[in-house]
Length: 116
Image 1 (cartoon, rainbow, N blue to C red):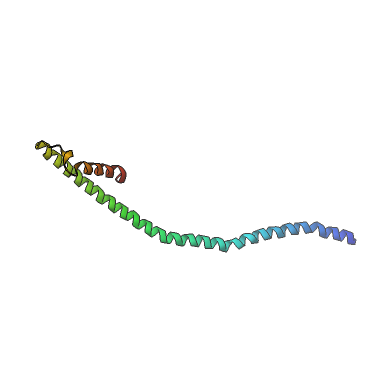
Image 2: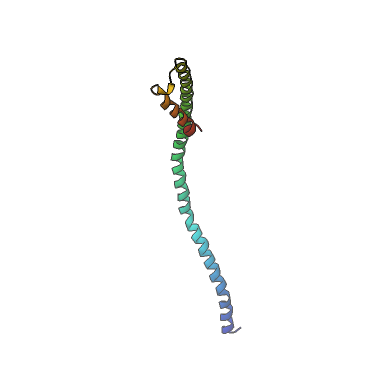
């Protein structure tokens, strides 16, 4: 085989190696991203580790507060009903009593906005 033939044979193989090297560089570039991505995942896990307990506590507080508001609204409705009945027996318009109308409004607001 001549020198020219040998060179041709060598050069015919080189582009394949360059492609393989390029492919390896791409694969290695992806490997370099692993620690960065790991750090990102761990950072977000750490943030959630702080946030989730606070959220769970807040959800628990909201549930308890809604329960208390519901209880207060039921007691207020009972009181309003009793005051309305007694005031009508006496011939008095219950809406003229101090706080009656406002309590009705706030119980209604509680039911429509907080206790849905």
